[in-house]
Image (cartoon, rainbow, N blue to C red):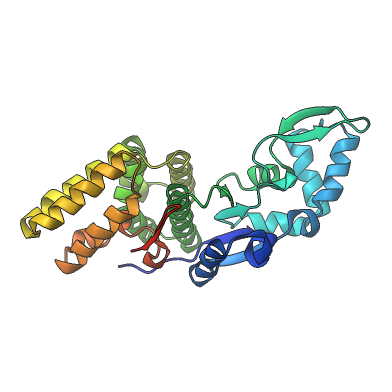
Length: 311
């Protein structure tokens, strides 16, 4: 299978290295990530001057518009702007007010009455400075389906970021060809629109083509992977390989497919099965498809409250 581009991931410093704040199993997960991702650890409150920004917002009764907020962030920490421009994902400690995705209270400059409940300041800064980054909290990432969704997206964004840096039409064409099924799994209309864009790419300005491709890709990844589309891909592949499979292999696959449809099993189990068949029977046109190998196999881990099954 193809090599992986290392995504850039920001993790709350207290999650990455303070074992007292996280259980042993999830610290193992973070240790695994270090082998396959470029990890940046930050404390939003201390490292990014968000405490000072909070004080400014309190004095202004939180009446800043977005442009003024961005200007204030740049004044307080210009490095933050550069840092966020190339980050693919964030795993944040949701209990921190600055990292809360909802219900963060903004107070008046006096008294105990709050003006509004909004997202935390750091998440607000991320959304303003790099709206395409994938953000998750440490409590949600423990869910296997959410974890897989997060990994799929950040590795896909990292691959596309590499294409943007190369500024090469050939790189874009290779990316599109290799990620067709994965993008289709997020929505058939998106791959159709991207196919149309690619078909006219040789006649257009490459910078504009890349910008439009990024926009369509972002729209596709704004939702979760579509179960129906994923099952369609899996069944087509299963039919292709069925002539090679033993009855027990067929039964295991179909049972796992049913469990996935009922949200009782993760997609990675089925991806792993088909990926092994692709390698065993050397099916070259499927080997290139990232749908079956969206992120390093070592990170494919099926987890429940009762057991951990490493596949």
